[in-house]
Image (cartoon, helix red, strand yellow):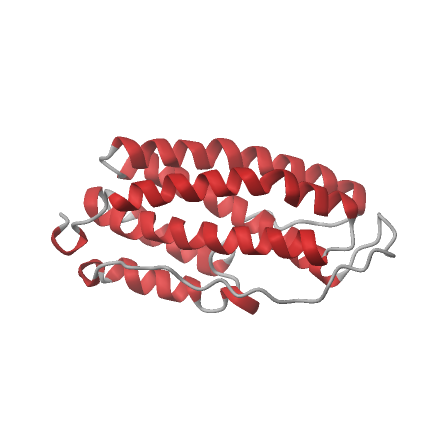
Length: 198
């Protein structure tokens, strides 16, 4: 869900694009994920939506489209089997996630974005120009950071969301996102020569 213009994600898309253009800088990212927000009010009706629910649905829809498109770039632009496999995993899981979210949103009367955000689109454009190690050195570290942010956002929904369907959705998908993060971190361990990548 890289590229959001508010909250925790502000400016990340621009940082990613700059990083993709300056591959030789190297990567050593372990951002602090801030908690926050207020406690969930148990008195909310199960179908009621608050600002957290709406932001979560919009961000997750855009982020899922970004992950699917980025996974496609990984499948064709990386020369490494583990990165291509991770890209396939992104396509499979985030397509399922998106379908499930749309079904919930339709019932709740939420109109979801049909494409990735402008910042996400710019990142995808940069990735479309990269190949091999240059692609890996941009894509893999971003996926580590992105999934850390995703996990934090899904936890926020579980904690602060008013709508039970969206909170349950977030709970169901948190283990999948944690698995994605683990796979991205494993791929990052093999992405250790970015300064000299060709």
